[in-house]
Image 1 (cartoon, rainbow, N blue to C red):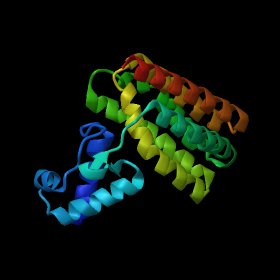
Image 2: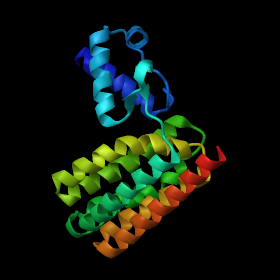
Image 3: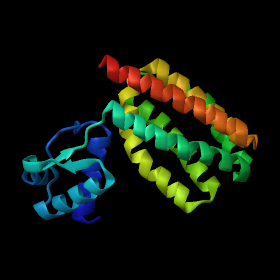
Image 4: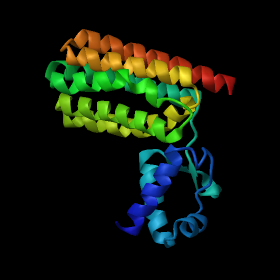
Length: 213
């Protein structure tokens, strides 16, 4: 792997996992020393992160980690509803039922992965990722799938805001199971409704958490 790719992967992971908090200055000298690469690969990595919207130029401060505000969460979910509700509908029409039936069974068992053990939670997030990937494959629309993958970069950061709320994670697991079940049943309208409910509850919870914080 090229040095710039290593730097990009490491910085991106640190941003998504909130090890680099919003507003953190990503100084080239500091990051190159931390990551063990020269400044040029770090500069290239910061350019890629800025293009993705995970970092932004902040005048004299250089490049900083992008902030997440209530307004930005609203905007993300507006786009998310447009894309994901349509994708769920198409997946119900075009997807392989057995794939989603299997995911449904796994998601029903997901609460067993949700405890205070971080590695176990990562297993749950990986399972949700497999549902996302199955939907992307089922819609058979490269433009829609690419748009959703780009959006999920930012949703991964937002999701961490709810990571310490076990009740919400358990509810989300049930909502994901309902989406998989509707797609497996080949019912587009039910898939749309299940996705809409999940998005509404997720947004309500995130906004309440942000306001309380």
